[in-house]
Length: 496
Image 1 (cartoon, rainbow, N blue to C red):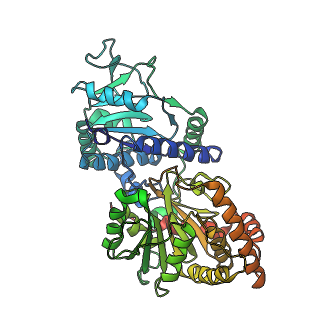
Image 2: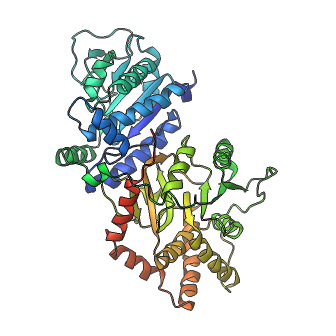
Image 3: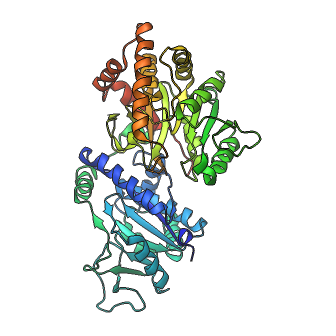
């Protein structure tokens, strides 16, 4: 039995109040990285109530037209399509508030292996049963039910196919009604099951409170009526991609390279391994600092953005994201642009707070973007080249082994150039928690790099790193940030 192919999983990120945004992001990162070691990760784009996709579906909704619940149903519909196109037999759906027991994966594999073929959907988060009879041939007591709990459940391929067909024919915000109309055979774990998932009650409570407050909030009228194709007539941004590849990314590098080249990006693979490949930049130093230096110095300044990718990032949605970025990068004031990642300090908000965040918006303005999957404006690259010349000629220069620190210099450049760091919320790419370097070494090196950078800025009569960071923090929630996010919200980014 191939465990990686038997079960696919997806995690839905419901909106919370501001108190639990970071905690939910951390939990989702832990869930995704834990389960990805056993199961296939599915991540489809998540639409929002402001999106034309949801607005159009709401107009077809024969129920109450609740856009908030429609967002989940639409996401599940897309997730089911990806699941059907995979070779997995079961689809595990979890909410961002879920916590799993220590032996969940092995238990789930045994459960699905022995699950009677008559069961098409199983609530792992128990719901009320419609029968006193126990379903036979299961590894633990299971009873039939009339619905499934959307916080945690399993779909078989048959259930997914039925759900897709029903939603296609009659999109609805009523999840329970969709299950009923699909005639999916449902069962549930019992309330006293020792294997059911747990909840982080703070996250779940914040989700529910958000729903109670904002469920009936209407989308702004101008967003419904006005489709803004911002700068559609401007030239397509020219992108040059640089991919960082090392010994542990052999299973992923070719897919990323093919995606970049297939989309038309001029692409360079920075190969730090001893195995050389024609057409790659072989013998590139393993140091992240030197790899980023290589990318900056070899970047063609006739291009508009440098796309830097570390090859440990996984997704099958590269093409969709590139198409989305093609539109976002035509907007003014975008300095860096990144997707959401399952594990990154900037996504979890640790010491890098959000500058502008609004629920139901497709993007947010952040303090900085990690250079993991990041588009960087040409003007910023030009600035960083000048710093590199200064750094390499400095009497205290050294050869970084790891090389944390470029993001600090980038942040100063962007502030001076009036450019912003934008994080997309519709795509979430898999990125591992672990790293292959010593973080204590990385911190020491970052301090040395920062000290040289401070001298560089002083010599140019520019504000110091700390002064710029304080200025950025004082500008949180500024009108200019809101204006840029509103423009991105109005982009029609999908024809789905």
